[in-house]
Length: 303
Image (cartoon, rainbow, N blue to C red; front, side, top):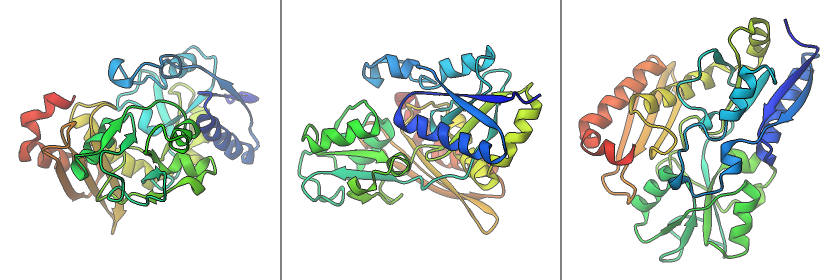
């Protein structure tokens, strides 16, 4: 049975609320009334460096617990924050159409590319994936661990606390802050995180009626493409701290999957490019490629 008013669980950041409101608007088009319930997560409360805390599910754990207790009816997450294995009794009822998954550079002093950053520039990011690919491009650059929302990170550039930051374009765009973008980074330089720019709408499996209704928001090409990326992450045994970049697209009815992974200092960078008839096949081929080309020798160093 679908409640008279759907309670949507969300973090309280501007971006998370934008995402929850977007889902709410889509449901209102289906004549479903909604309210947003803000829930603080471990990632919101624990402001230590990511490298000093366990990061698996830190932005969704408390929201999922509220869902299981029946305090909310569904939750909205950034798919890249969702672990590849969900808790028992929960399922992703919808993965809506993805925004542009690219990363962007936001820099000061008119810099419009990573190559144009000054020598030894400080680049704000808390992502091992970005650090790895950044160091592979420019070993001289100094990754600067940074926390905070999109506007906070941009402000650190404007205040010259760092020379640049790298962010997901989807978040910048959704918040209407495109004017700050110095350059959109091509996948040859910076592959995104698995699932980046896609939303995940999570419900209890037993709520069959609500799950079916949310199916109207699901975008099968996005679900399949992000599924390949997340399957690869799972096969490599990693979470959000694994420095893996992955991007899957549909090309001529086949999944085209690109991936990149390396050590924190950018050494040993491996890049692969495979196709498959299904998300599983593409992920399997990519995992086999990476492991057979040296990743198995040092995977334990980066997991």
